Length: 161
Ligand code: HEC
Image (cartoon, rainbow, N blue to C red; front, side, top):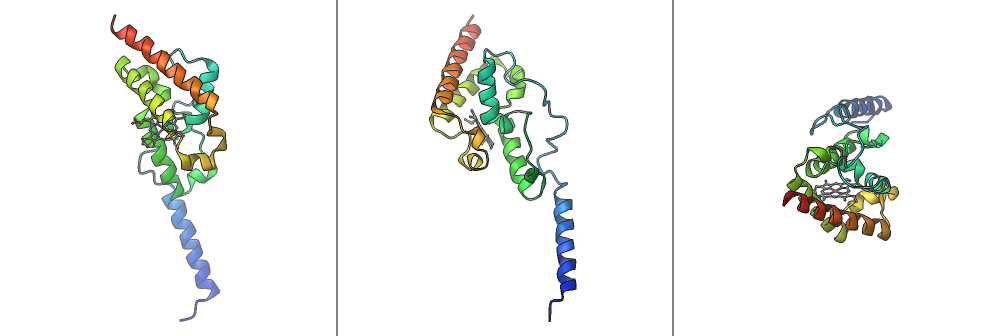
């Protein structure tokens, strides 16, 4: 059997069509529509404007509804990997919905933020390869940890009243 240019052309067209169709599939739900992209992060907390900006830069793509979707994130199968991260990230901690967490949930999340930063687990290493801007300096990490501890103490004092 010889492979003609024509059959290669047909195969390529078929592949491109398949990718186009698969890119319409969102296994974890359509996350781009309806997301509350305007809402500021960490509403109802004591986080200062610069601190919110740091969190948005380092964590916001996965842990908020202000996700910036790069062009490559629209094409399957990469779209599924990116959407899975965003889905999981928001499930664990959605900074756009901070006000909807109970006091105890916030206290727990603040402890987890401290742990993740101390263990250098977040932002995830593979993500940093693609997003140099998300790398937080030692000083920024320290500010974030100090704030998370202070906010946790404040909320604990509040709930024991
Ligand atoms: C590329 C997407 C992505 C970015 C960016 C990211 N995270 Fe995450 N994060 C995840 C995913 C996915 C999970 C859930 C699975 C896991 O724990 O690996 C998670 C889990 C967490 C958890 C919960 C861990 C636990 O104890 O259950 C915390 C807290 C967290 N991230 C904090 C942060 C902080 C703080 C930043 C920014 C400095 C950040 N993340 C940046 C994707 C991300």
